[in-house]
Length: 325
Image 1 (cartoon, rainbow, N blue to C red):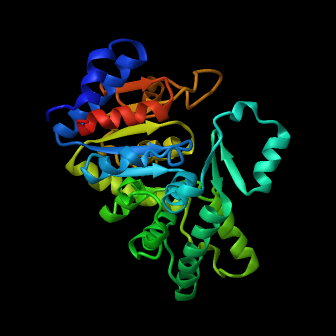
Image 2 (cartoon, rainbow, N blue to C red; image 1 turned 90 degrees about the vertical axis):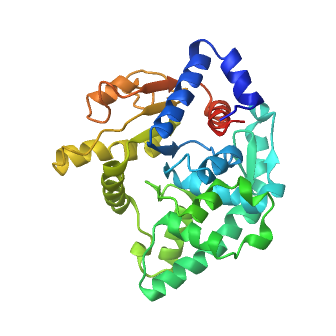
Image 3 (cartoon, rainbow, N blue to C red; image 1 turned 45 degrees about the vertical axis):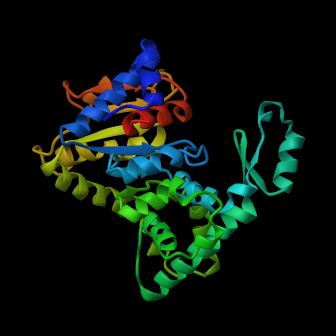
């Protein structure tokens, strides 16, 4: 692949420290794919509100991402942005906000994520109404689906198409839905839609709390998917941020080995984490990759990279390199 200007800039100027780690990790990712491997990506933080879909969607379309684990927030916030982008409000002076300023944002139904405010009515409530119809229909039919499957249904069903406010090619979840990409969403209850679902169960709109499948079932699905896929190809682990999005899926390997006694299942074939978390007093998100060897997640020879920087800067640059931009 002939590399474009962004990739050429990176390889010329990013020679040391975290910059060099970015290049090394991108080239390691590229080598894994070139050798026939696959890549699993995890999304923590507010990467969807940071509009990572501008690059991640194309990574999915080009077959450079083969599975995703994300928080419930990242699952829904990509769709919030898809239908309500024009109503978002940026607050570049967010460091100067007083408690009264924050209350005024709340009074305007603007929920702040650092410098970006998500509009409750145009984003959250609009998606709630769309997905509630799917929850109720599944509940009445005695069907059960995972959170990402409900989102796939509303996207592929076209009920939101007339409301798109960005180029749909910039939605990573829509790209994933079109490829039926495996997605795993641990702790989905800790999300806006998770809270809304709970409210609808309490109010009786949804009768069966198990209409939405969650955590343990996601791990079971991940275990079977990982086992089947790694018979055919090595699978790498590309972690953006920390938290449950990374902690949950990486544990599937020791679970398969130690709890299911499947010693022949391969370890993760590559590991990279982008994080600004520091190593201190039990911080798992800040742990160096070698610590994962002791937990049976990575091997001695697994290519390991850690880029201690802002993922909203690093991830798009790495994806640009992998896409040849």
